[in-house]
Image (cartoon, rainbow, N blue to C red; front, side, top):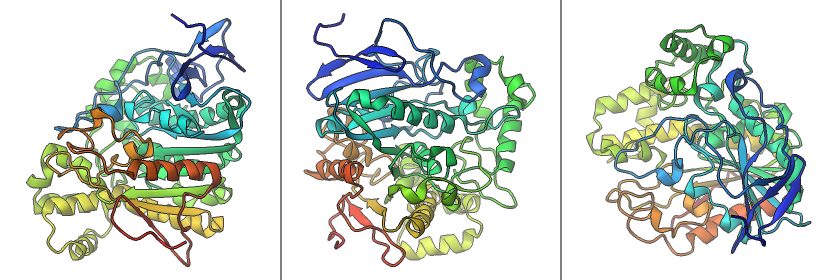
Length: 486
């Protein structure tokens, strides 16, 4: 039941009713494109036709079709959200704002992670209360995943999930002023797969003018599949479904069937004569591009965009610690993963061993994964952006170590998110099998990290020295180290 005090906002597609709380106003399940059904699942997004009357914006939307994810002993529900909540109209955004008035506040548009196969803006970690509290309008985006979002098919546009994010950014340009946001001060930011998509926007010509700043959290500027690698995934999917590898043949297949064949795509050999597997076998889906985003920044808006980019210091632990693999990893496992992701695995392992002379096989395996999945591609994108942007690149390294799993999780992939969204004190993040472990979060760290993100969105300066080719400064966050001089 609506309350008389609930706010109603008029946007181009119709009127929407939200809810007012202690942090401001919240509007949910706002469609930025028409529902992707049938053959439309393999087409570019098209504008939503709008509605009559007042739309209920107080309840969450359905989510993109996706499989359940299991991270062993670690509860990742706050990250993945509820999983698949069926419903056609899931190309939606949620908006958190201090007030839907005439203000021109900074806007942040968040693109979730999940390996290109899972996730949604319904995840508890992405609550935007702290951003609204601090004068920022936060928009969180759902996009197509898995086969509808990223399988490369004849007769379908490539990278449909990325096209969805572009459509959402166009929606923001047309609509966010109604929610008290400034369309000329938009920061797009993402984590993991969402960060890789954000990095790709920097190299996408159609993204010009849609945002002013970007934040890439644990993404990969060299994480795209080559067309040859994509063809292998497409062939395997078509064979598992028993259909031809075309959009026309895939169109009648129900979403449930797409999910049932995903196990057949796990572990595909994607190494080719010209490319290693940029995702180390962890996902059969990624962007499909002839040139990696880090090498194509001149094609897009990157030179005119401020960039904040970085990784966590123990990214690979997420893929090993929850399953007990930090302890069970053997030398053969380390050699196998190095061979999967490096053109010269022996040289790469020698470097890792020199940096960790007393490292266990599990620690070495984690380091190899972290470097291949996130660090190398992040460094390449930071360097490329710094060359063309004139001092508008900022780099961080997040080193706070979660105490989860008897302290084994450490500064793993995703651990920075509660500090970015300033919800690190929430009880659902604490306990030995929860993301931040049994102890309290360190005092002041969330305020510091969240404040840096909000300041960057407002001014383009997170509060530390820029990264330049002459002075490649990296800000350490969450570690007891001296700040970089300004």
